[in-house]
Image (cartoon, rainbow, N blue to C red; front, side):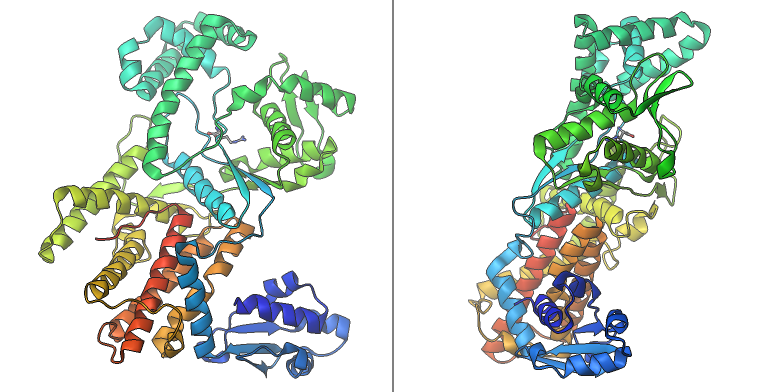
Length: 574
Ligand code: ARG
């Protein structure tokens, strides 16, 4: 049973508030002995015209609030709920053992479609650590919504359109190296792009040629389209390798070019709705009543821009998916852009604009600047992953040696790849998304810290206990005896397990995967305290051994499920 929801339902009955409202108000008391949940009565003071402590006393005495195994008390303006340890252990552990690593799944989203747009790198440009942020954050948000039963559509809104493609076509015809494009596409495209700008300083006619090529591309001229397609294909191939490595997937790679053909219809619609005005030669939508600068739809030369493509894209998404939510995981610097786009949609009369959400995030920084890169300050994701995996491998190798380990080099490399990538992902997701991230290998690879290696290690070590028990013919208990798990350390683990589901829902509502990372990190800490203080296989009675093994299994299930939601793989051995 989900006690929090049950308590919320009863409170709703007693207070006349909506269950959801109550749920959002319920707190977890700062100290374990104060109870499991607390409801602050301040919200009721106005309607009931009484002081919160008095309201608390009255409600707490109500018969309607009775739930078996839950005791109710008052502390000033708070109503405290304390679930009997025995009953909590029974209900939480059996729920988890039954669900296995499907624990946390829900049906709140069934029948609803959510579009999550993330990654969206630019063709012919290197995939840098900023694109990794949207990729990792978006992947996690997509997984979270999926877990809650939503039909999730993963969109990669590739930057595959714009005047720079005219430049690339010009540059490729002059200096392109077919073989290099084959072998190292992004670097080759970057090289000719940089060369174009250098040469164009002395040779302005290059710019005219580029403009001409872009125009031909827009008009669908065969040769130009073929080259553009080639650039797009080879770039995407490179990106897909990185996605594979990180376990990231998409349903849809419709880039800006795809939506560009849909702009004329949007422009017509804006005109017929009298929303377009001319400003300094450009066609814009005025947004001063929203306190926003005008949104440019067509430039003075009649060409479209980034915002026009986004207007067409949003409309396309709604027409084809009837989404309940359309989430854009894009850096905070584009906040104004999205506000403008959503405001224009709203002016066009589209209520779905209210269900478009920009999920922004901070910047990526490095504590020690060991990276030298071609392009000033840009750090490539591949370099970050390689370096981290390399360092992880070193640590795992040393640990394995110290333990006189039995792992082959191949096994170690495989584990290091997963743990290293996990460490990078976790670093992106362990704090609120709007905070800047500072990469520091010492910190992110600390096997005792708030890191993926710590969590994966906790998982693997627990699996090894379960394996060991299995070899001795002892299995975790399936259904009974959980009520024996009432010691302080056991209770702390169970308590934190009990809050996992809630953390998934909160993460979804706030687009903050760190709600989950924080919860599983707490579970692992509590579990390790229990592990260090108590004996599992020598717990005494067979019943207790088996109950504790079930606790181990529950911890494994929830850690795995939580890590999966972040996009991190576990390993069975480490
Ligand atoms: N390609 C863009 C960039 O790298 C991000 C695209 C964001 N998505 C959108 N619908 N505008 O900055």
